Image 1 (cartoon, rainbow, N blue to C red):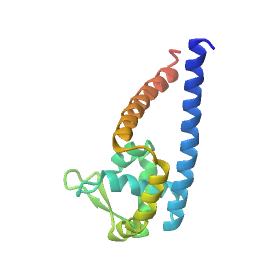
Image 2: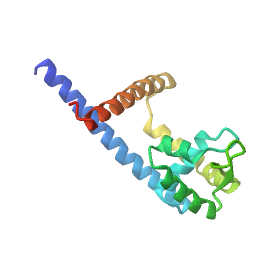
Image 3: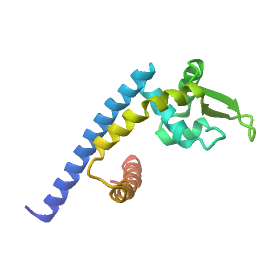
Length: 160
């Protein structure tokens, strides 16, 4: 097999592996969400807030950027999550036009209740990879993600 064909095959295999991983992660997220009685999108919003919040809350735009979704969708879903007492939305002290979103104690307790199961699942998914290997993989995936955004922009403006 020619060198170019081997590279094309390796790229295709990588892409299909990512598609498979994405599909499995969606199923996992749906399961976690069902355990809390929420949607997969709402689960991801809670997870983004949990990760991004450094004690002052998170902006809806910050959550939207993390999840690569429209801010209006975040606003709509966070209102629903607030009614379920899973998060609070408070006017930002820095700019009254924005809200700071935080998890409630109820949400934190629900997430904590799932911790052991989530850790066991992570051990299954990443079995055989130590911390160094995961850091290496994450650096490579970050580079691929950045390059894929550039490639998408190039495709969208019609250069290729």
